[in-house]
Image (cartoon, rainbow, N blue to C red; front, side):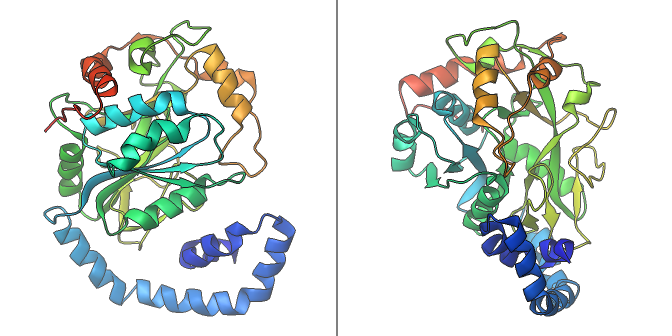
Amino acid sequence: MIDLIKKYDVPIYFGLFRKIEDRELRKRLYIALAPVLFIYGFFYFIYENTIDRLFVQHELKSFISKKYKYNLAFVACVLNEGRYLEEWIEYHRLVGVDKFYIFDNGSTDNTKEILRKYIDEGIVELEYFPGKGKQLDMYYAGLKKCRRKAKYVGFIDLDEFVVPADENKNLVEVLDDRFSHFKNMAALSINWLVFGSSGHKLRPEGLVIDNYLNRAEYDSSTNRLLKFIANPRLIKGCITSPHFAYLRNDTLKQLNESGVEIDSPWNDYPNNTYDYIRINHYYGKSEEDCKAKFNRGNVSRPDYIKRKWDQFVLYDRNEVHDERMLVYSDRIKQAIEGYGVNEKIV
């Protein structure tokens, strides 16, 4: 029953059940409302598999050429990550992201002050969203905000940088190419490419992309997790994992860049190709940074479990020297120092 509610009663799942912290109370409410939820889910199932399929097919045929307020929006959850916000925003603006929906999970640093200039320009929309284990709820709230406004939406964290393989292309060009190439594609899944500490024990000054230039081999198991960028009108949201989308109906597909169908949060070697797009995942950065990250807890877990140090050891991959990101460094610094001079890749 719970799985059916997650699949067919998504607004009720996030609007009601996810707001109840007490899991026992949540179970009792599931049972009490089961008949109503079953009827609602049944009619939605019928609608999804009849009339809505026509709307989905129209969306698939028209959205690539249609004009939207934003070409590419990112939804992000932050918690005391103010020191990384400018670099993350300015890099992604360079490669085509034109709107950021940022949800603050209870920061006590200068996050709001850092974001003020972007908020005033309409580049960032900031919402305070406290509570433990709220990542999926924040993602759903972001999806609702951009569903009609953005051509594409990505659900990307502050330690993740989405990178086009061709430095002369922006992300929207890559997405248009891949979504046009594959039939019935609703979401493009992108594998992590994990970057290690590059030997830094303390947090170095300067940009993340300058300081961390060593990464895992392509076949490392640390790269297996995915994030995705989707047509926001063709997904229901991240229901069980931030790494995987529930799609609007079963005719749609979640694929990687090579057309491999994705049915879980993982995509293992050799299917994790990086010919068009990748996500540089700066998992721990320096040892100092990683300790701070672990102390913040896991935003996707209701119990806020702190990760053990062996996780840092596992993800501290430095086998390959990779300078792909240095091409953006000077432009990011210029944009941060003189806000408003960010020259996008077009």
